[in-house]
Image 1 (cartoon, rainbow, N blue to C red):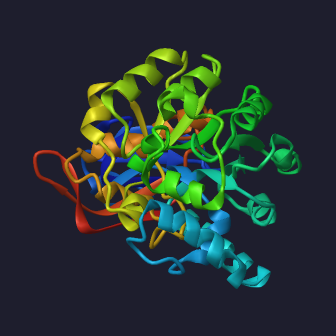
Image 2: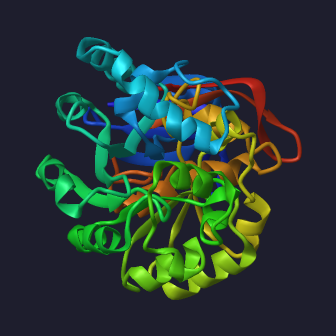
Length: 376
């Protein structure tokens, strides 16, 4: 059993000063209380900073960890997509395994408790089976010439289900078929990362030009927009993670949130977007519509690290209590694991993270040098 005290506990959007969290040897929370005098607390560890539950990384590509630094920053949306295909063959299986193992270990040490992870092959599953992180894997159907049956072998892996990659990269029949394969499982769909996604539906932009050069035709443009394709292709009861969202409009958010029965997870990966195109997600717009925001890191192909805390630093205008809610309980709800993790509550095993380098200036905020490390 451990008793851990700190200056603050940030949990479910609230800040508790002077917390003491007691956990058993299995990491289960036994008690949450407040200290008055540290000197009177026996057998208690004290840490300077803020405690929070383990992070939920709501979008990652662990298997692409070997591509760190392989694609130039600022290559643009279409340029990045082309570069992925060009550099993937330059690395051995041993290099790929070393990279993903190191990335998994570092995520754990920096406080990640669960990951929504995209897979295109089976290279990451052996590591995941031994990891202390909870992984929900999404076997991604990608490519205008792909068929839904192509992801079935991956879906036989532990805790893995199918998902279409995006509204611009999968033909109509395959999109609907792979969504149906997920059944009661959530879908994780890349959505409105670039203005080219909407422009494609008008036959314009870099995606349309690239497809034209390759001789590829899209049979889904009749929907008129990515948002309309989403609501006209999926059932109202579908659980859904929409990832990136840099170019969503008020009309898109209203249409999608009003259609689905369950809250849609709007997953933001700000450092990845900054790496590729410099675009920023419309946080204020999403908040005005009471959107359920979650946070992901994307892959090391478009990021310098898989640090959730570094992602939160990108939301400098958002109170830390709010952004931490996006990175913990909202992600847990999205993955259906909120009974076990996502908040520091009695009976849960959420992990416990220490954030060092916080300031209390009209509310808690992160300093540029703030860092996170796992305590439990």
